[in-house]
Image 1 (cartoon, rainbow, N blue to C red):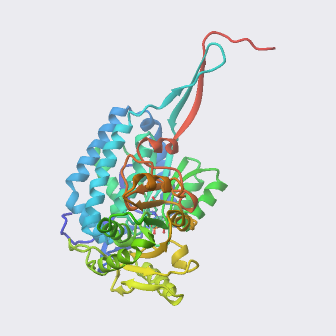
Image 2: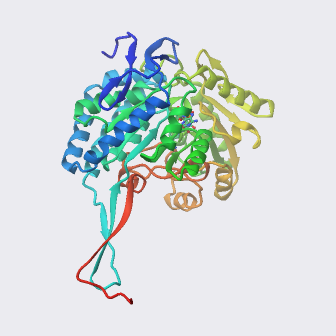
Image 3: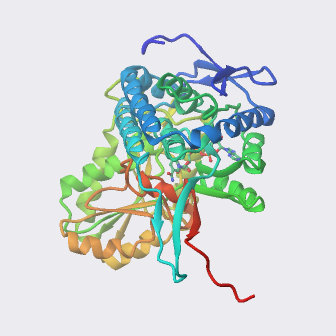
Length: 491
Ligand code: NAD
């Protein structure tokens, strides 16, 4: 389909290398969050469909796990090229299916080919260590082997990156995968990979994609958690869903990587460059309408610059263009669903009722929510406590770096943080004290590169994606010894 074509796509499951009708035969409507138009009719899958996908993945595992690294590498390199060749079409789909603006769409399109090319290199990463043994004649090795079938559950928000991340490391380390994309991004966060990897030469069954209608993830996730073939699960999504999944995985003694929500602080120290601080804060808080796990949610500023910084950031925030994400100049596109819009609006109104001041924005405009800057949000307001997935940031003023750290850590989450300062030493000293998986000194929190150890602490989850760090998650480390000659036994 061309980038501008608006016909409705028909989407089936991708199982065993084939495009397969769902067992129940039904479809659900996949809609454009800005216009409400139906963009695709998508297979509404069931637990039985997930079981078929797991069986296909299990059948493909023995051969794929023995496939030489050169072959795995070639497939990933080809997939990167194919994706790049479809750039305009994919960016258009990101807008149509997920309300993603042109800028963030282009960022995703830049990221994923790099992710695939780095995965291609990881096919040759060393997979073992020789460990000195005290037993004479024993040669002792720690050897990493693929685990089997990996279940991958991805969100809609950076659909291209996060679904690609969910499958790349598991596949390149020799596992087979069943991907369950979000019901809000079944094509561009899921079935697209069936098309691209089939064309790149991935053997049938190595990657399978199963979709489902709204609110019907449970049975498919249950199959992934309970099937004995599935040896690992990776989940990227909200903390609430991740907690449920982790409970079920615990009952089944199944390891699960959890990449969850964040309530990310951006600290602006008094020595920060003001122009830079204002643009970094606006970018960190409002890129993709604040629907990024790393988005800056609280901006903690030192008192000497607080007044000027706040008024300049409020002015910038009020000036961000809002509207159709397909228009290239749009900065703030729609929120993903009406329900998401109601949640964001409800939390902002609730904070205001409790004494917060609106410095910019604060209102819904059609399916969009204005970029919003608040001050004086009470610490027990829901907005202060719980990740609010929209373009809303709250200013907090502090008197020292230490107080800034205390404010930053006063959350159950711990994903990403930023510290804006012109003094890298002070920035690093404060970074050491932050409870987050990721900290950027003199940058805002929204940043990712495919090779970096990405993940959170506290309620933001556990486990790491990124380069060969993901090897810990998607391989089994085995101890193997070889005894040369014989050894004495006491009886
Ligand atoms: P979500 O939790 O609603 O959905 C995530 C995935 O879980 C979807 O595929 C959904 O279908 C599935 N799901 C729903 N119910 C399930 C169940 N009972 N069992 C198993 N899976 C189920 O999250 P979302 O709205 O799609 O994504 C936004 C959230 O994801 C935000 O909280 C954001 O911070 C977080 N996120 C985290 C990261 C990260 O790397 N830490 C990255 C992106 C997004």
